[in-house]
Length: 230
Image 1 (cartoon, rainbow, N blue to C red):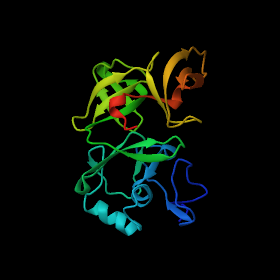
Image 2: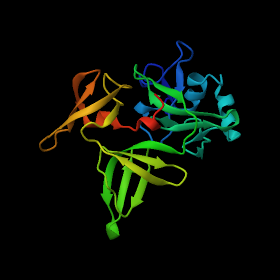
Image 3: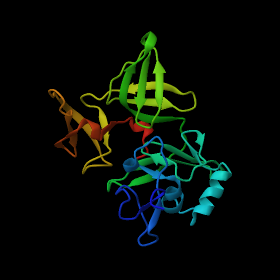
Image 4: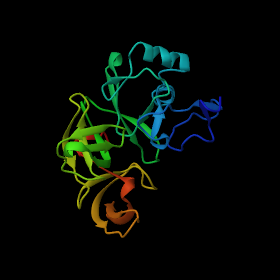
């Protein structure tokens, strides 16, 4: 049980859990997101949407191909669904985007429709024949001949065509969304990217509610207001 489940006390703070409902919670399978910024399909359907009460009911929904993440039918009730993912319930004609609320909890926000999502660039690798592999925060790796971006930027990725549509630069005046830290779930505007030396983690200054605040580059996510639900 320990390998396949978590206790309520060891579950990430980003999860919304019903008080004293149960001691054990399904542990996420290996997947595209870190446990701290994702929730299982099981928890999502039971708690965030309240569409099921038991794991048996969750599995029935998945068996009927009624749960889609970023255009892909999901069958595993422990599959980790993470920040910026697009969730679709075809039979109910409901579509949601996964985001942090201002309390740092992963929540669902309804959207009309979308074939694209925001993905943060977390790595770049030059391969043979000068091909560029772009590594994204949700586990995707995109192979390109040329990429006009860098680590920390965001791409608009069309999950139907499997193509990058646009690069959003992490630069001055960029609109950012905080995914870690005390301001998780809020928006700001980049004022300055602070130069660093050696192996120091890069920091930046952003403006939130008219106040200058400093944070790590890893804590921010460049966004396009047209592709975010809040």
